[in-house]
Length: 364
Image (tube, rainbow, N blue to C red; front, side):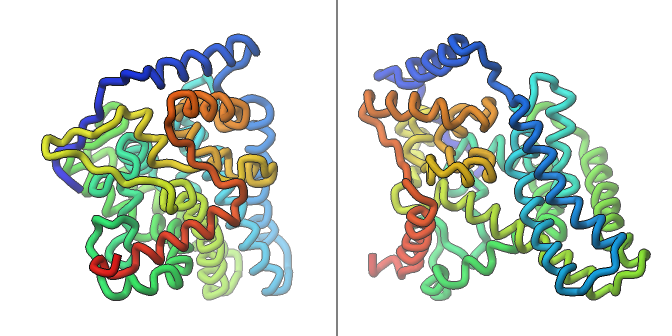
């Protein structure tokens, strides 16, 4: 990561964000709506946690075939991804509820997903949402050396095949959370003094990390073994659950930013970006399958990434409605609004882009 973060232009001569913000605020006022979640989100919370936890309790309490157990771990992975995208995500953005304690509680659901609140808020809320698609500042572009997500990243010969092997690595996302990612992130963020809100003492941060990891391992690995499930079945189920969740989450994340249409702008020699922050989001973000009700419901509105990036404190249940406002305002100001009509189209665009990025630079 670069030492000095880039600075966005403060000159909005076309008054894009001022116009858009007023229109969105008027929409909520005219319809007498709160910007946070409502009963639809609360019902979805119950459904997602049921998908995640009910199979776990069935495995612990019922005698069933190994194949059925394995199938249930896949369902748990689907529920795990659903909790992350719909509940944890809104909670940590402060958009789940008007009550701060409820946002904190729902945001804390990341601990049962193998993550850490402080780390996630720094990586996602601070680095990703502020410096979207800027190489060296947005950590979502950093997949190690094995995958090349930008033209400015170092190229290696293995990248020629990344559009084939990347999908297999995507499934390791949350598994890595559980094993190594949080440790590396916490060490890095503490060293840099990064935080979302008030900076907590390193001792407190490490204490919380160690305790929550021990509890996590006790619940998902130690307890099933103590209840009589063979250790290798427990480890296999644990991996399958994480791999399922990681694959879903990674694909959804990549379709929003790592596609052919989105840009990876860099600051000039003075560390300044060409556009304002809001306009920058339009150039670096894409929507997909906006009319697909199943995708809309399951992904927690993350297929409406443009709306989410410009209004991260608005609950995802409103994105479908305000999307037309954002799209129309962008068109009026001659600004891009990247959108794939189908998820299949977005997936194809992502892997085409990976193939392009995998080519040796001299060949481009």
